Image 1 (cartoon, helix red, strand yellow):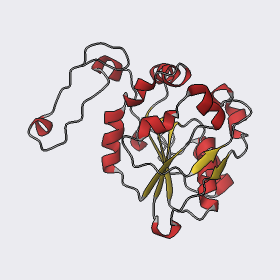
Image 2 (cartoon, rainbow, N blue to C red; image 1 turned 180 degrees about the vertical axis):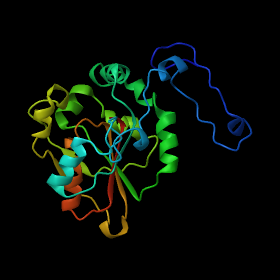
Image 3 (cartoon, one colour; image 1 turned 90 degrees about the horizontal axis):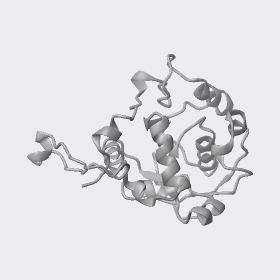
Image 4 (cartoon, rainbow, N blue to C red; image 1 turned 60 degrees about the vertical axis):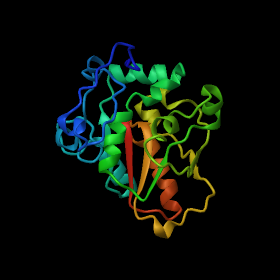
Length: 226
């Protein structure tokens, strides 16, 4: 097998539980050298509400959203946004290497087994980005892991989030509305919204707001990187 990121030989180091069938064997698509360049996030080492690496218990972004929306943020991420993650998304999203959608399958799959929700949806690509790239990067990354329910429609923004500074991101107007569907709100006790990158949380808050207006509650969010 080859690492999907660097194309070097990949050796899966199976644990005894995996070898004896106690745990499911999930092949890794990322070699150990590439994996060593990742920084794992957790609530114990950062913000208790979004996993951002900080010295304090709650980051300024989460305090801002609590003040603005009167909510306690509920977000989890796997990896810190560093040079490796930046390079990954550059190749995946900008240059359209769609095979990289499977790079973190093992990590996402393991996370999904420990976190259950009644309904899982995601941040969709706008029509402009969909035509430009030819695929929806968030859907491609997660659809083999979660049973996704499309619920949101994203309008084209004035310019991509990646080209905005922090202030511009925070000032981004609402770009989501709820897709017409037959989801029964009364039967959905917990909802998860997926995205690829969480920077300030502005995108997730808009998506969350669109669902809350429709009557959904108990909403959590998740992203590969923070």
